[in-house]
Length: 135
Image (cartoon, rainbow, N blue to C red):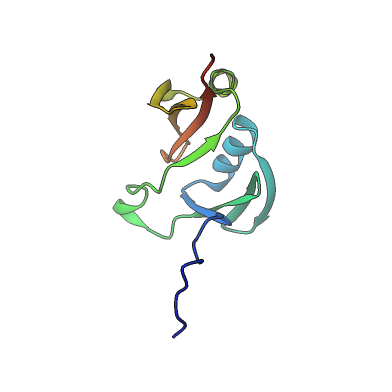
């Protein structure tokens, strides 16, 4: 076993996996509604998107029957420069927000804004923006 050093630490996310129940519907939502860059599909059950250097992998649920689709994954937070503009654009594309843009934390240098919504498989997504304080 290798000794752990003080310098080691996880930092960069390489890929996020998300389970979906209808892959073509999910691809259309993420590509056409959210405007994410589609990378490739690995038939029959996976699709990949680029999120600013982090890869999002969607795969069909392996669960069958009554429990399929009852669990939700982690929340993916997308950083945007202008949260009001981003919310307006994806709202015009049919996204309904669980929580519209609102301040979640007042930091010394900025206010942290977030807005929450769901994809067609009910996975929770969010947009976030640090709005610098004026003055």
